[in-house]
Image (cartoon, rainbow, N blue to C red; front, side, top):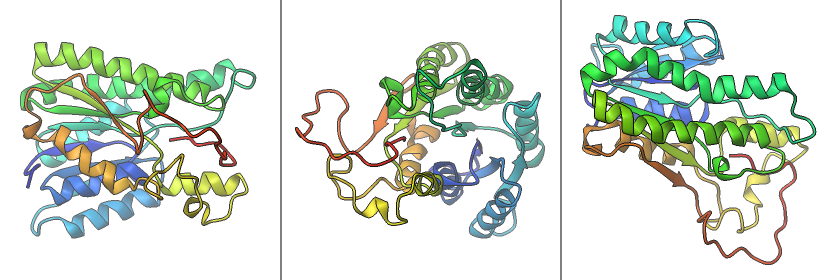
Length: 274
C-alpha cells in the first residue's frame, strides 16, 4: 500500500474527481477527511470508505462547509489531527466551475471564482503547513488544462486556474526548500464526472452525449474517468515522489502545445469545460 497510515484531506470529495481520489487514497492505506458542500453525499461517501477500509479503525471522516467560510481551513485541519492524530497530505480539489466571458463577468462573480479556486487552496495550505512540515508531507493541487488559455466562455474560471498553477510552482520551490513540503499539481483535461453530465444535460444534450463525441476531443473514443485521475494522484502523495516539487502535469488525451488539429472541428453544444 503506497499511502499506508498517511492522513489526507481531499476537498470537494463528495463527487467526481475528489471522490475518486479519496477512494483511491483509502485503497492505498490512507485515512481521509472527506469534504464537500453536499450534506447528503458527504456522510454517504464516508460510510462507503469506512466499509472499504481496514477493519478496526475508521478510514474516513466528513466535513460539510463552504471552503470560503472563515476558519473552514483551520476546522478541516483540526478535524484531521483530532480524528487521526496527524496530517500528511492535502488535495486541493474543490472548485467552482461556471461559465463567464468578457461581457458577462462582473466583479462579484470574478471575486467568487478566485475565492474558491485560488484563495481557498492557499488558505488550506497555510492552515495545514505546521503539520505537513512535521510529516514532510505533500500538497496536490487539482487544476485544469484551461489554465493555459481556456475557452471564451470560461474566462474567470481559466484565470483562477492559471493563478493556482502559479501558486503551485511558487510554493513548490519555497516550501520544499524551507519546510520540506512538496507542492505539485495535476491539470485534468475533459473528465466524465457526475457534475459534467449534469452541466451538459442543462445545455440540452441527451444523457448519452458523451458516447457521440468527435475524436478531435477524445482520440480514445471516450472521456477520461475520475478513477484515472485518482490513480495519478497517488504518486504525488506517496513517498515515492521523492524530492519532486513545483511540477505541473497535464492529464489529457492530446497535447496542448504542438498539436495538429483537424481542419474541421464539430463543436459540442455547451462548450468543453474540464
